[in-house]
Length: 230
Image (cartoon, rainbow, N blue to C red; front, side, top):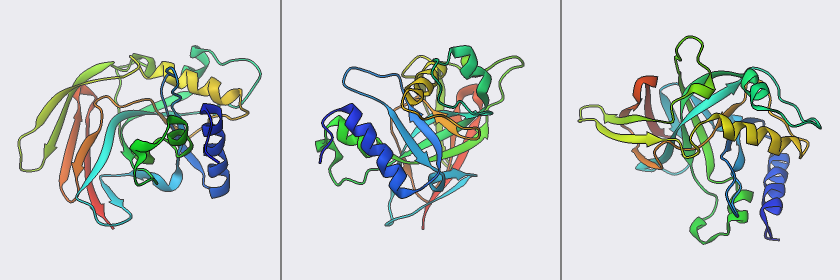
C-alpha cells in the first residue's frame, strides 16, 4: 500500500526502522515546507568516521554527498507532554562536526515518486560521514554557527574549486528544535550520542571515488576524505 500523505510516509519509515532492528545513530531534518516533511533516521552501520569511507555495493565512479554540519547530543531529549524550547535543546547539544550526508535510494527511479513515498524510503538517507570537530570561539554554541561561508573542494594534485555555501534554513538550531518537538508528539525522542544534520550548505556534490579529497568549510576547518569501493 502506497502512503497517502506525509503521516503515512513517516509511519512507514518508522515501521521499516522497527523491522530492520537497526540502531538510529543520527537524524536528518529541516524546517517543514508546504507538502514536505524532512525527518529521517540514519543507522549506526551507515555512519563513517575517519578519512577513508568504504562504500558497499557495486563499484562506482562517484558518490553523491551533501556538505553539512552535524550537531551531537550530550544528553537525551525524551518524549514528554510539554514542548521543548530553544534553550533546552541548546543545552542538550554538545560538539559540532563537519559532515557529509551520503545520498542514495532503494528505488531505480526515485524522481517518479511522490514526496510521501520518498519520506517512507528515508529521503535518500544512505549514510553520514562525521568529520573533524568544529572549533567554535570561546562561549559560542551551535546557535552561533555561521549561516554562510566559502567552501573549497580540492582533489590532491589539482587546483581547489571554491564556492559559497549557505544554510537552507538560515541556521542549524531551529530545525533541531522542530525535530525534537516533531518526534516528541509521536512518542519518540533524541538520545545522547546521536547526531543531527539540518540541511546542505551547498546542494549535492558529485565526489570521485579513489581520490584523496579535502573539503574546506571556510574558517570552520577541513574534512579530508577518500571514498573507496569495497
